[in-house]
Image (cartoon, rainbow, N blue to C red; front, side):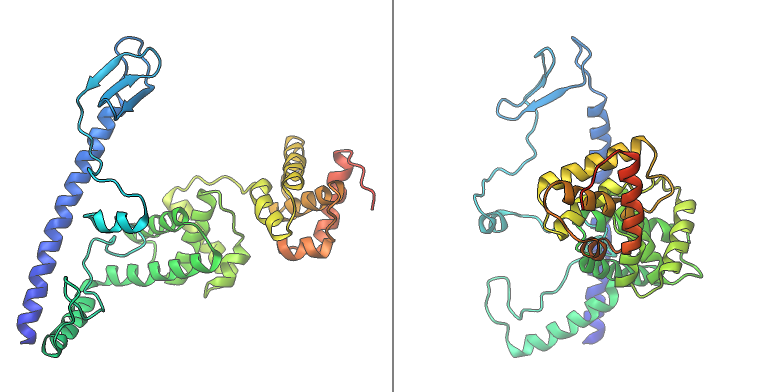
Length: 338
């Protein structure tokens, strides 16, 4: 009995691989069509600003108004939905492909609820068979060592991103960076947790969602030193072109943590822009400079926050804030009344 079930699951796995290959071919076709479309220019004025008018099924030049193409196919759904429940009921597709799952979310899952497609309860006889199918489904979902590595690393990435409250695009970028590291065999001799944490830090830098090494180290299972070392290694080997973190990127998060108004935040950003033009931020930690600018702005805006409060939110010492705010006030001729 178990042998027959395993054979069935193997057949399902083969069909799934064939479906995955067909999906890849269709994705390549769509990418090729997209590239052809981006090369389309207006034959009248040569403009590339083309707009799809879906009501009239026309491709119109935004510059001169020439209709370049008409009667094109609308690939959107033929139904309308006015709330989330309607959208879920009428949709005929599953979840989109994602890099945050080792098989990119293309595999099927046997639901944990013991009910059939009509919502009826499954008999106790078939329930035992379903239990065995679920167990073998979990086993064959991870077929080799590479997929096992990816399954563990991506779950670790998701755990750390959830603890830091990072958005979806950062998680996807981190998963892509880790997959590139696996493809180039950069994992050998290094811990999975260390490479995953370094990939998450690189993704934060790429997506302009700044998180310090200390914050990444707090939610990971490795030290700050190892994360920094691994990050430098994978960024060099993968050719990641990452600019230094700007202090301005930290201002919204720190101001939100201190419950400061938008005017204070805008003034802090302006102070940092002036400091950047005079090269006062070079060679200094971005979090310390951002904290000093927020401290100055809070005093000027009448919403005074103590150095200790700003230091706790920014993760720096009070001495750092004192040194940085004195430099900024002196070089930018800002008069601060304490």
